[in-house]
Image 1 (cartoon, rainbow over the protein chains, first blue to last red):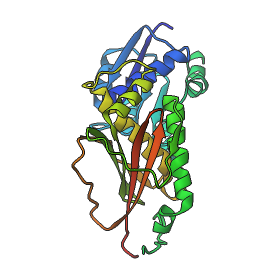
Image 2: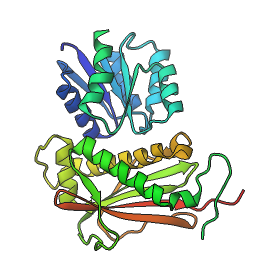
Image 3: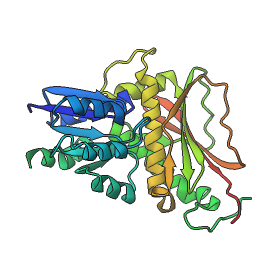
Image 4: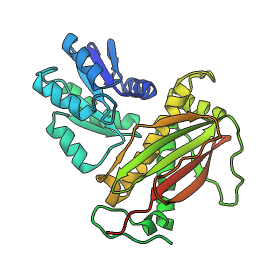
Length: 125
Length: 173
């Protein structure tokens, strides 16, 4: 798949796991951008065009929910699917993320099937 | 003896110490290991000897909100290496690789989150701290108030790890 994916997670290991699982699900991009927190992701989004954002919620410096808010305020990445990938799977948080602009939600731990069911449809739509 | 707290949004100590909670913990560990690592993890019998590896790696995640406490995952370097390698699809990992600590931290995070999401009174009312990873074995985690502790040893492949959940006693309303 041509384009760029941005993976935001404070864990390097989890970023690798997300990228590996995307690949196993047949969701592969030409370019990969990685950020360790929301602030770093914001910097990358101001300078790059991306086609998919996979984002953790619970991160230092700037959380995933704060990042969603900033993306909305600055009108960055219009129309780009943002999928939250997090251990925080409670209903209010899912609602909060969706209201803030997330298009999908995947709870850790996850499998290839979760990516296929929750990410792939967002890319063909 | 711990007192049950009935205030809304709080978690009762007897629920924490119940057999049902052990089932929830075991289910969580099994799910995390099965889905993220492709391993079967099973709780060792209570009579099983404690883990004695000296070169340990421990990850700690704190709970706050409806419950204050911690989740600790403690294992040998060998076990941590096996987990880091499995997370990356079987890639060999060097003992000095930082991803070992990262993997144990994420494992702890997923177990802590998976467990609290299974407890309705905690799911949306309890927050997790980012994981902290400690090297070595001569340390203790102190709670600021008296707390109850659940220690459980799990086995996977040829390794084991110890899971410790601590729950602080709450002030009576």
